Image (cartoon, rainbow, N blue to C red; front, side, top):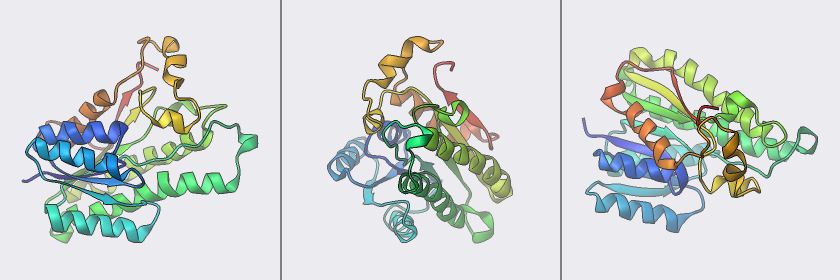
Length: 248
């Protein structure tokens, strides 16, 4: 079966690294991006240079209609969607619980939780055997924060990723008989631009010596795990997690 994979948040960091990794393995890619159009099309050009088809679609995954449009366009231009990498997420500046406001919480949860659910829904509608689909794979990008809680920094972000863990477990059981596998990766302390969104671009450098492996991780290391979960090599794996946090 031709491999067509949608990657939300695919213009930078883990999403970008995953797109390149998958393209090298023969996947045709739809990059979902919200703001970074130039970066998204740079990734598209890199994928095409590797001999695979690629498109970029601007989408705010917190908007239901935009999510539907994303899947419709990917299906129309690339073909049957066999994979989804639920990677898009947002992070706000570090704050304690006393500093959190409803507006911030609702924005984070709308993207990180509701958006992931909507993308998973659209994928299942197309992949499920009962709808005439051929099955497929969903990989959710959670975070070590879901296990660690991120006290004094990102409890709201951590909570949103905890919801992604629950989605992974429940959805995997719900759609297993429909030919769909659902797993997650939980990265932590990875060198990406997201730390700047939280107000501390050098956060990994500050933390790395406290990790058992004494170093931060690279986006490419996470991408390899995602690629394995999307591959036939993990064909009997569903409802599971791969932790990539240097032993933390």
